[in-house]
Image (cartoon, rainbow, N blue to C red; front, top):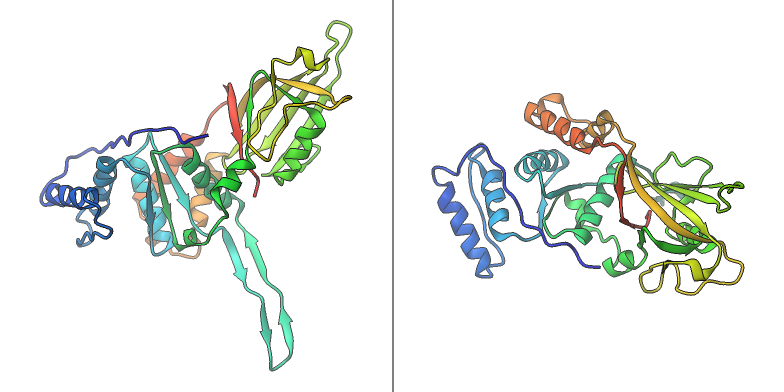
Length: 324
């Protein structure tokens, strides 16, 4: 599994002017020559973000931008989304609404346990950024210093993922066990991130095969994955055995007595409203005054929300990543 190659497509309503062209050419030349550190200086409002966008497009490499705080990260994210609407621009900041580390007071001999609360919407954006790095080369991640803390080895994260494709055959029990191993929680009705539901409609006289529907609330997108299976009566009827990465997923051999299920269709359903996406980004700068959020930023949040609104879309295959 390798990231898809893609070129950055810069969309800007204006051309570089003033000393911007020389700054862009200078940055590109030095970085292409292998210079590890290059500094761009400029006063507020001189177009430094536009120069960075031009440089990213010219170099055509995955890019990480680290901002000193969440406000600047959110503003950079919104601006770069407008410059690169066809590319993967992701947002990665701390997903804690509240965090108090564990502590010990020698004076009173008391121990206080760690207390934290995770913002699920921000955590979705973090997973989205992580998945983009696996799937696309035309990726820009705008982050706060939260990104310096390791999320584990990339190879282990990828090995735990599974590829679901139309025509595959899976053993029912093994697939459910795999979902649990990926830290998805089974629920009667999957409504929360990281939950999955499993519904079986037994066949009738006209259609002896049972139909099984798997619904998974994704952790990296405000969407629900829906997979419809049909029961396969014997291994000989299977078109393609379940596909897995090394060390995980569904094996090539099926045990006697396993109910075998063939993937008939895969679809994605949007389940996050525009206001929900807007709130997710605004939450990342909670506690700041409205004056610190420019009208430009707010309008870009609206554009980002509208871009996520979609009806059910059929796909032929889908990579399902771990829930944690």
